[in-house]
Length: 144
Image (cartoon, rainbow, N blue to C red):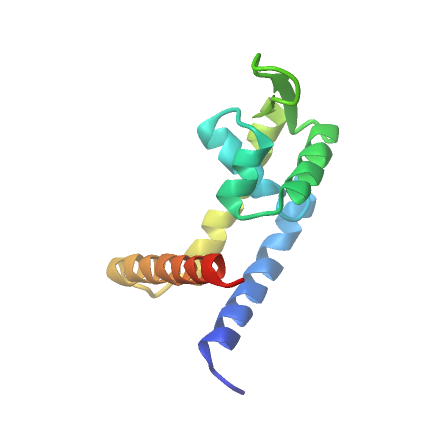
């Protein structure tokens, strides 16, 4: 089997997704939703556009996720007082509990994924992934 970085990243992503997916169902969340809850839990209320920009996600996708999370009781929308169309999204207590459960599951996954790595290797791995992300993001900004 080919061991290019592309294939290795795909395989690691796929293994991660398969490990984490049952946790989504247990918490009543859908794909992509935990990251929105984690952002709101850490940073407080914000506009949907902020979520889309932060996660490099299409605003329409964020809108759909927010609607589903609102229907599930995980978040609410409130007016920010700046006028029409300026709703803020904020996490509910149910959303905070789901986010905490998801974070626990992610910490478990990370511990399994990085077992046998030294602290220095963990740090380097994180910095390599960040640099790879930034390189790809910069390249996509200049590519038509």
